Length: 429
Image (cartoon, rainbow, N blue to C red; front, side, top):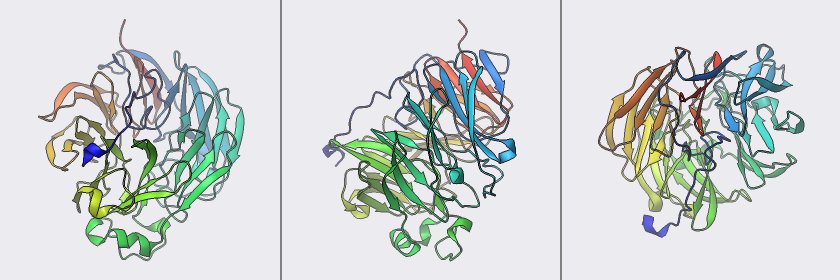
């Protein structure tokens, strides 16, 4: 029963900052209120700066600084840009050189991982170019070569911080692992390698593949429709921390301090794009490319597929962006731009509605006053209120610039990264 789980209360961090992928707690939620709801190229613009290259990562915000990763020098450098939050003025940029060919998809430029900061350092993962840490003035503190990342679609997982560790879901492709390094030195504290195909397929059969049809493939992993591009989250259960990751064909929880596996739940899809979503002790994992989705109660031990899995859909709509949990429901948008509301405990779709702007890869952001923000590939953001009864639109805002990033809300500021520019919006005063 859910009542046996004691989930730590969340304040969603300091609402003035947005320090990592999916915000202060990795949930898409912030304690910020009063953010702008209407904007456009000539409306409520604080500033706009051109970016030298397109990218899929989302900016992060700490105090008066905004950080964003992007490819430089025609892809031969992997860069981190720091700008002034108030003015958009560039404060510094740093990069690492990587001149070897690195496979990716044309819609997934290099530097697709969002950086992370704790206010003393900022850490970025650049795939084969390594994991790099700078201080907030742009001085390099350490750099780790984690080896080549090889997959035909590139990478997308972002590093997270937990206590004194920086944790990364390295992959997908030829080499895959969860790795934790000391955030002050970059030295490895623990690493967990991926399962082989035989062990992985015992946890989830071909009925969960969707359109990937990966179950019988013997091609190299770097060439297959299989892998995890999502970012793990930290969940507090009965006084212990669990690092929860959606991996190919399964959801797994680890002790973040040691990397010891706590529990695993089978039945997942081979393609895991969306990050895990937590709601009152329940983890929802949404499958990619029509593959399986499921929900499982956290806090178990060993294989919990039969004891803790609440629902399972062998074939689903196909998700890429991550949703937000609110009062027992998940709000999430599919690749085609259809927004849906799902019951956390049953998986039932309560409603769906097409939003403006077409398809999206983006994840949803929610403020403490209840507003949700969904950005589409065309640069249109739909602002809506969560309701189990139906879609309640507040506003629809067009920028007419393509993007695969997600909306950032920090205090009263709203930041959007497009393929062309970095925008900051603030309500008129």
